[in-house]
Length: 330
Image 1: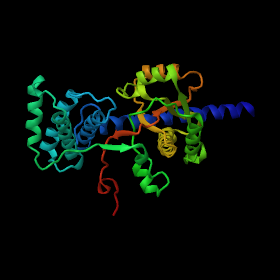
Image 2: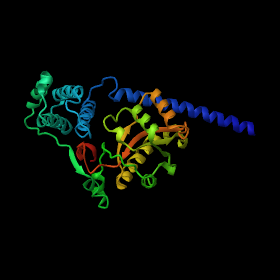
Image 3: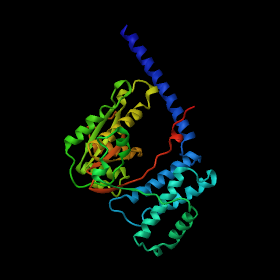
Image 4: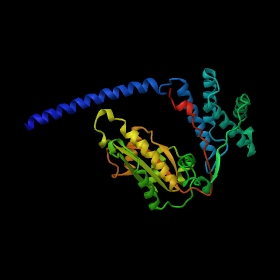
């Protein structure tokens, strides 16, 4: 009897493994066919590249120790992308128009600072020649805020609170009290999860481990060194019960991450999500840095740089797509 049960379980396990491979092959085929990987050009892939490029410039415009003439390569690539998009699809897309506005804000910043454009005349002439063709688009404006103004909606209606949260890339040297971090994570535990399985954990790093992990992540130059703590959000594979649930760690991890962001904002902990999209070698290196508390079943979802916001600072505009683009209904 026992032998028969074991044989049946082995058979079920083999069937699950085969089903998992079918699903992953299907996922891989869809990814290669529909993503922007491999140079596939559609309205969506071009728009995404334009947004990624203009957001790099927005971040540069809001850095605590901003340097002039930053991002020349990004600016040049953004101009090429806008030209390609406009040739294929026109220039009425709101995100593309905002990209032009960001470039105008970039130029205005340098003009207002008395920058010496003769240092690279060809670059600046090309930029101005490109922008002058868009006389109907004004310069964008990143947001300058105060500490009290940034958190003014914390006790107000949820729509006001949600709209007030922004990624912050400027921190004081003050240490965040651990009870405040604990309160924020505790509030994030209200996040719903599939069948209440609660996949997620938060690892808090400081000191040398924080420094090493931020250097490894690489997307926090110009502000990461100011962060007091780094939070690592993970999601566990142990809760996955079938191949059909293979994406649950990311769905539930993303929900938890956003809830944690709201919780941090409520407790006045400035933060910025740092994407964890890394090669396998870096993922392995991160596991070494985080240490044995990180189980092999845990998948890294994202990092959060955390600190106390200064009395005055800048946040990126980062406009959202229109409701008409996002909400599909009859």
